[in-house]
Image 1 (cartoon, rainbow, N blue to C red):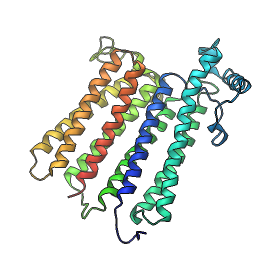
Image 2: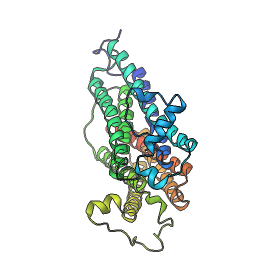
Image 3: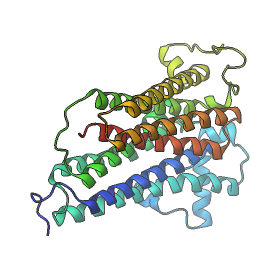
Image 4: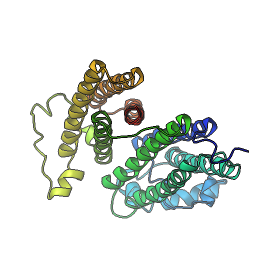
Length: 343
């Protein structure tokens, strides 16, 4: 049995955290498919325990379908939907929720095992508890998001989708950072430097861009202004302004898409400049420079993919690819920021 005091690193713990991060990524992908297929409101009740089982009989399916028929999405958009069509969207949402439960179990059970056997570095215990709390909070926020579309709306509120997706990406980034800490151990020195501050700033910009993308998804803003670089032939969308500041920021399709475009330009320029500067630096280790280049390359790929996704009207496979690459960009940016803080 390994004592807490003997080591500040554990590669088995790191592997476990990387696996959980991969599961979170899978959950983001399934969640994206659930959103793109308009399946997220098919389950109208939150049953954290009993909801793990799908409908087991014809009567169960009819009961679930009857509940769905009571919400505005069915009444205004899907009236006349068959039971078989309902089952298709139901399975997407059920799979998303089941994967969330599996992520929780994949985190909690090994965490307890490592804790009991004293194989978890002491400095990471509090952080892992925080990750577990964030994961549980994500489930509650997911239901808070779904609830916004059950009474007066035909879809979930964009700002709630932004919080839900933002927390998922924050959890992914925190898992990657903690896994790197567990693999390599505590840094001998973590003094702030221009590079560490710059890498963290780039990470913040990328996260902000992901939040803007969530608003695009929540408002279906990718289905309008499908030309580029102009927006229906103009530099500025004609329907930019909403009835108020928050309505404009979170609900205006023109404003939301413009903000996401501008954010993409800014992130791309900053990532390229940082990578160019890193390659010319005499003081950065090779792996730090390589990570800077990897971040810039992934950002450029994501920008190109975003334009293609927009032009083609957000088909499901391109929308999912765009979301997957966003997760890769964030993970690389986390690794770059983590490495830039270590001499």
